[in-house]
Image 1 (tube, one colour):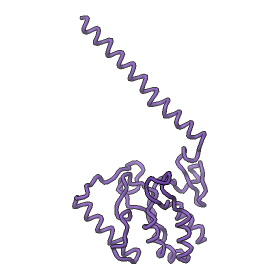
Image 2 (cartoon, rainbow, N blue to C red; image 1 turned 90 degrees about the vertical axis):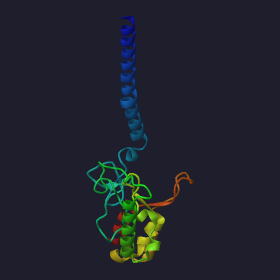
Image 3 (cartoon, rainbow, N blue to C red; image 1 turned 60 degrees about the vertical axis):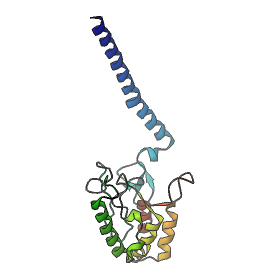
Image 4 (tube, rainbow, N blue to C red; image 1 turned 45 degrees about the vertical axis):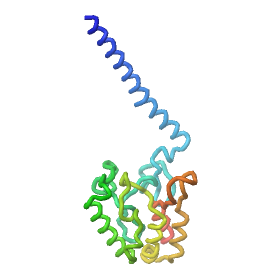
Length: 203
């Protein structure tokens, strides 16, 4: 009987601790982080939303997208993002990678198919197609592309928008971010912000 009572007390103590940490770490801590983020940088805390003019906004009704979320670009005359395997593609509710290994026949076939398609679209040899043009990111929602992939698309976008290659290249340069903290990752180009800049200049 004493052993049963001791077990009950220990279980009750464990349950109390679980409830305490659930409230502290599952509710209070996230709320505190959100509140601090909203106070310091409301735009980032609310999803980095962007209007059609490229301006930051905190109003979802005004937004055409998020600077930190990749999305499908249907206009063939604009810069195209990385491929996505999130759901049916660019699905915010099903963000994930393909989980296919480097030796997967399915992945290899997909890369070959995409490389051919991108090369034909851009009018270049397949050897010039960069890796991020044919591979999805781990999230399937990467908002950025490599500088190499952006520059590959410059002639096509310039011709489609009635702009010079120099004008579009300057927009690519303006929307290129360097390595994080100067050392992490590679230089990258935000597709949404670049396309909005292209449309603004084309108008």
